[in-house]
Image (tube, rainbow, N blue to C red):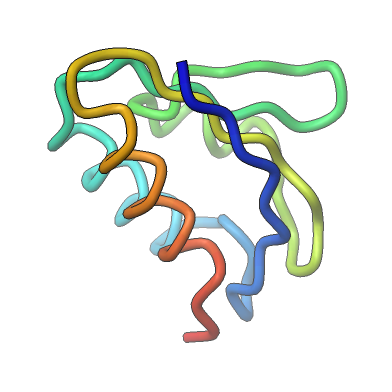
Length: 85
């Protein structure tokens, strides 16, 4: 399992359109991917789960992936969250 803490730099946080893009990207990987904020952990491949975290700009989240392509999944998804769109 690969785990990384990330500060979300997206201008609107991980809300609406960025959340949809994030979930779409997460679904490209075969690994199980989870996103954690505070004490809540959700499936990163679920738009409802990601939206329920209400992740804003400059908030810290933990991304976890487990599976064959876990390294690539974490690297790709972290770079999405750290980019300033």
